[in-house]
Structures are given as C-alpha cells and as structure tokens.
Length: 125
Image (cartoon, helix red, strand yellow):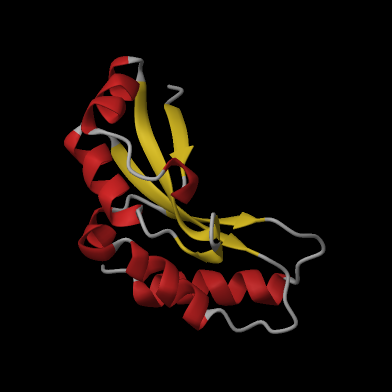
C-alpha cells in the first residue's frame, strides 16, 4: 500500500492545527519534519519542529524527522545529531523514523555511518 507523505520545514513556521487536519483529510497520513537544516536564519535546528510535531500528531498523522547532512571535512556528527533531535523536544519519543537528507556530493560513507550511529545512540528505545 502506498502512503501519502509530505515534509515540512522551518520555512513553513507554525501552520494551524486546521492546516494539518486538512492534509489528513486530503489523504496524507505521514508528515516528516525538518529537525536540522537550512532555516530562514541559516543552517541549524528547526525552531518550530516541536510545535509542528505536536500539530501533526493532533491531526492524526504519523510523524518522522529528517536531518540535512552536508559533506564536511570531519566524520563526526554527534553535535549535529544532538542539536537536531533536541529540536524535536518532548516529541522526540514519538518519531517513527529519522532520515538523513543528503544534500551534497560527494559525501563520505564514514560521515553517513557516523550519523546513523549517533541517531541510534541518541534516540529513545
């Protein structure tokens, strides 16, 4: 079965609960939310992530998060992942998944694996 999903980021700020309910009524059942990435103020955590997660869940949507990851001169991602998951606030435990949104090429596999390991270490359960 195909699931309809949509993503939302810091650029959409704080849509009303009705907006999320309308997405649900239109047939969407999964909302994935930017936890860290490009914001109107530059790269960083989405300051609206916790609110967006709350509204999506109140509308009956499953929720997940995504973290934009860029190529870098280091493989270490622990602070990036920490900052991203912290943006989810009290809703972190309700995330059905956390995905890496790879935005640059080339990106070293070691960096992606380090991010994957850090997500596993920092998520509940």
